[in-house]
Length: 630
Image (cartoon, rainbow, N blue to C red; front, top):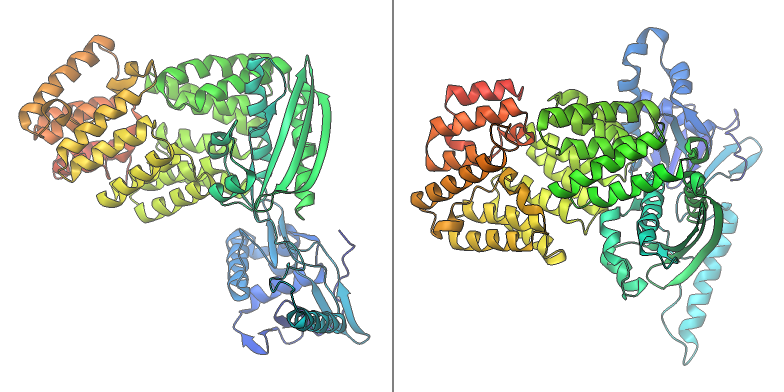
């Protein structure tokens, strides 16, 4: 980055993009037309223009613009001022052209600035926004425009020359996917290590708030694919991809990575790295910084936050993630001891605590498992407050275990501020919003998660579930079908599709989809079926009759009693079944048992359609209050 040149004190007017700021008059103009902007946002702009390209901390702005006696309201005031300023400039925090946010630090003005002082124009050079050419003087820009126009005329007149012109500069890279790194070892067990390298690099690059980075779930579907890079780029809707290889020998690891423009398969950058397995996090940070520099972005702080990890701890962590990603009960039971093994080998490994917390949230029995999740999430945040995944895991615990809605929302927002591209944070935040009845916001947040992880069946079926909670059953069904088009073996998408179909009266089709869901379930899933909110007696009756419900209920109750005698329940599915039968007393008894057990799904009491028949009952309202729902 070139050294920034500040705005001289004698400069009254400063130009950037299509705007001109009159610092003396406190006015902003866009192409000669005055833009309405109040005093405080303009003052923030003036301070940023004094130091283009440099980080202006929040503390700097507080000291300059907010008197000491207003310190209590400073955060709210500054955020409001920056939002109004961005609105006036037509700027975006996600893809900034003028003002970049550095989470927990401050702001930086990133556009070329021209300050007109007493001694003529001064060109201010700083880090350009993605895809922005180097700033030029107005005179040079005029000559360039004339040259381009002349060349266009010349090409048009030349016989036999193509009329399609190649752009003067390649398009900016605003979206990126890290493809699964290839394992060069012959040992198949090293596949997990290669996948872990892919995952970690995604996590690093996802912290680039001004760029869309595809999540792990979607890119893993292209592992060992024969599709070309242009085909993959089109499927994921990205400008560029990173592909690479991993070779592990003992405690040493060699990594090669290459940045490729997706549409043209053009290699933009390639580099080899080698180091100790215990320093793998540092290695990944160096990779992230190198790739970021290539795409004209800057990532700071990775090296300082990275730490060596015990090789045994890292390997156990990778295997834990492998099982955790399956999102099934039997796999969660395998993931938990692996994360505990990683922590035993390296008690300071924050990501291992995150994995333990996320797995324990879905463990059994609910209350005991939630206590383990809470302790792990708090420890992860304590070890690394800058780790977005740690705050997202804490938000998950605060949602399902603590029912502390305000704290959970703060945790999710903190995770998103630290890592705007963290699909899991948007995904889990959407479920909190749904529990609170803020369904429009929940659907929007879920769509953001799906944009970051477009091929994820987990995020896809969650969006369908939120549309189901919104009573938009046709939209929910369409979303489930889209998810199944990408992943026909998705147990959860097909299961929830059957529930949505039931709500529309399509009983036979619902029964068919329910049967297909269980046929597609991997081996070992059967043990978790009594814990799933099935809600489909039509599977046995085929016509949605009360007799069918009762027969299914009888078998379901026997099954649950056999597997879990006298133990806490892990879902409120039996309460849903009794509610469908119209047996309010039985439904409320099972629902109370679910609340006492601390099951996760009780947070959706206010939005689950199965409970609509119970809402007027004072006993149901008392349960809502016990769950501390609004």
